[in-house]
Amino acid sequence: MAELHRKLPSVDDRINWLSVPADPTEYEQVADSLHSLFVTARNLAPDRNVTGCTRHPNGPVDTEAPEGWGRCLLCNSNRRIGHPGVKAAPEIQRGMWAIPEPPYSHRALTETMKKLNEAVMELGLQSPDRDFEHVADLAHSAFFIARELSRPRSRSGCPRHPGAPIDSDAPGGPQCLFCLGRQRLALQGEPKVNIRPSRPAPSIRRPRNWPARPADDA
Image 1 (cartoon, rainbow, N blue to C red):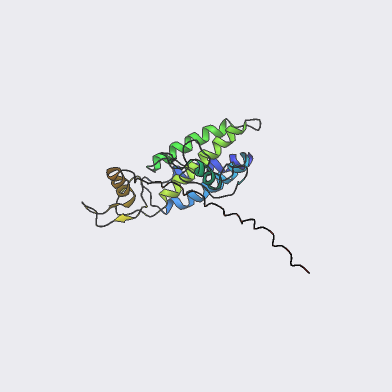
Image 2 (image 1 turned 90 degrees about the horizontal axis):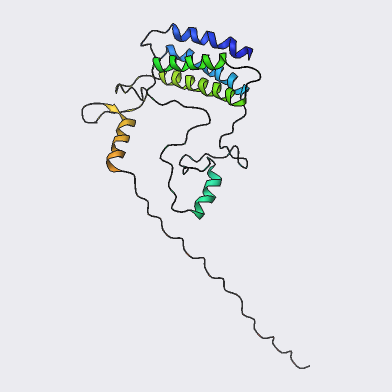
């Protein structure tokens, strides 16, 4: 707790002294400081594993898990065998800690830091686990925004993906490749997947019980 209260004001000072707009390189030290702050907050919060699965806590993550299912790819693969027609959830599965929605800007960073300061002020040693998790989520959100702002700006000028690759041959000039991909997906619709019925299991040939050969007379 003391380390958390010691690190937070210094990070606030770094952010408040930034010019708007600031160069991406100015956000690099801010992102490093926020990551250190997040690690401190994460160590105070209850442990979270990658998959949320008790059987495979460090297994692969299913990024296309259906709605209501867990994040463990190993368990979901077994469940898909009995539910071949199940579809992925409309929203992409996120990471363990909170990731804010774009656009990522200096204003979004300062608003997140304001929420983080308020949450830390209300935090005490006897606070429930969910309050510590909330602080860690806010710290990770602030770190994520600062990290995105520290990326070099692309020529597309996209506010949602400032460091994204560009499509130089796009109509109207260079545009964000991520946004173009979403636009094309919206026009074409989701791809249709034809699920083939599973083949019946091959029959097992049992050996014939041949009659015993009579023994030769001595």
